[in-house]
Image (cartoon, rainbow, N blue to C red; front, side):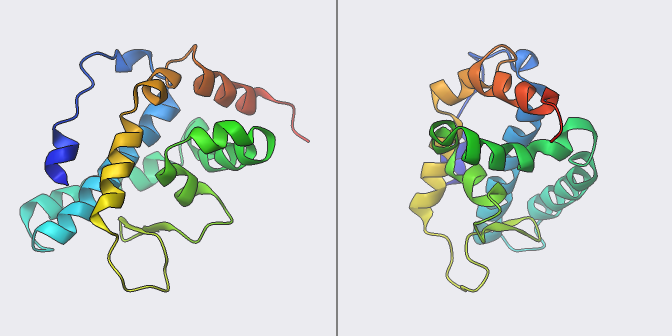
Length: 160
């Protein structure tokens, strides 16, 4: 699984032109995928897992800054207002940020069902990784692209 993630590349994309908030959550999701896979693959106290945990701990405060704090609300707004766009989001974003879904990050691990002790099937990681590196999804992250434009609309809409 980790090889499948690490073989992906963003060389054909100018990530500097991605919407900053969407890019943050894109990298955040990849970090959680990496951490969860690493916990399954390496000893919990391996240097790789300790470094990943420290990095994710730092990101907890970072996600509270500026418009980043509005991302979860944006995902739920998409679900209500633009269900077709919500359906096109990577499934991990749908599960983690949908307030009706029990999935979440627990100690930085991806947990799909908090009541289950079953490990996430390996094929789900392959699907998650492929969704985040889907060409159409990556194109939607650019500041003038569909998802980024919707995020800006959400941020700038009049409060109700």
